[in-house]
Image 1 (cartoon, rainbow, N blue to C red):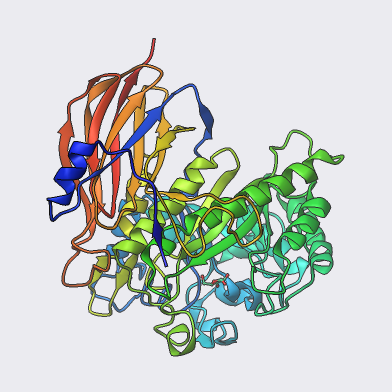
Image 2 (image 1 turned 60 degrees about the vertical axis):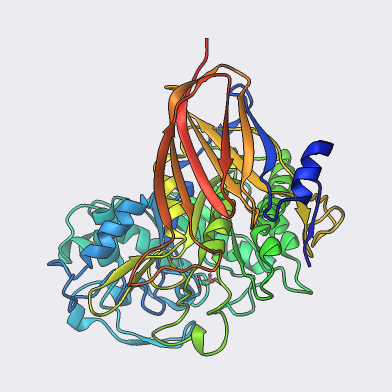
Length: 536
Ligand code: AHR
């Protein structure tokens, strides 16, 4: 049930007009931008994705040597082009749950000699024809930063050390020489490594309790760093909010015990709309914000204890799996070759924009984020075996942010009407933390040194446009402002091989000169405004 609340005070004359008018009038809002009120630098690595050996993500997604679209190395050129258009900044690999039963040595060397293995996380046969070097070739083709996860389930710390030696050591030891023998003369220099995936989860192969995870992860980190001191390490945090679990208890132990070792703590979040409650669903990014604040507190507490981090940065948060995922989450749709093939609609795209706004609003501490995933498996890019490809609805907000929302995140003032829902209202929250009604407009802004300002606005109102005054408090807006809008005929509209009705569309520029302008944000839309602020 959704309770729609407070709108602006409406003069009596207008009320008379409204009563006589069969259609809804726009609501009103204000956004104030102040370039002096800064939050932190937006890390380009928050615009990442994820590639797991699962369903048709690797085979039939990025890699399909028999496809009419394959390049000479077997990679799909249409997927490469779409990933470049998406501006993928960092790509996580090879899992996910998959990594906890993956032995990297199975996936290197001559393909004919690679063993096929039972893959237990997603019940598949893994032929290992795609492995470390194929992934690195792909990641170089799309121009992204690689991010590897090591096997903390069935794997050993020695195996993790040898992987770093294989990928990052130029020459000398056995595994560096082996890479050269495999045809890759130069090291790949992989900087980002996570110490396992969701090791707190009972579903994870080799699942551990927090104390055992910490013990194993510290030893693994030690030998990986001895091999290459320049790597950045990401600990597996907990995102298991099921009844009876204690995710923040796990995170506290990891942060306290590993505070001298890690650079990031990883957390995951998937949301859905199983009860078809639009307002509740589009509010779910608030939950991510809440969990970010909880983690921020735990990081602060850990960092307040004696640390020996030298000149390393403080610990940051990596939301290294996030997305909408619920239709293909259990039963037949979660296994086999077509596992996790969600088809996304417009409301999902609005939720994705909401997650991206959450990262920007927490730009000082969220420094890595990976939409899960990249292609076919809960993904923004979708292919078939006829060589066709389309961009799902969720592709477009991510593309807009990744392309444009850079610089310093600003602390924006927003005054719009609010609503409350089953899970999001004053006083209601999963963990008794403070919770407020949800504003219709979800707004962030970033500011670049050259004066460019980027304003990201989600209008969550299902039916009404919201006429908004946008006010600069620290200088004059200089026109023109470019306008990009992601919208569609209906919140349930999806894209497909036959067309993409939900996409980003460039609207006519707004000419602005002064400290304010007005714009009406259409119902159920994401809008990005790009212009300049002249400060003295
Ligand atoms: O992205 C799909 C799965 O979701 C990943 O394998 C796992 O880490 C998470 O539970």
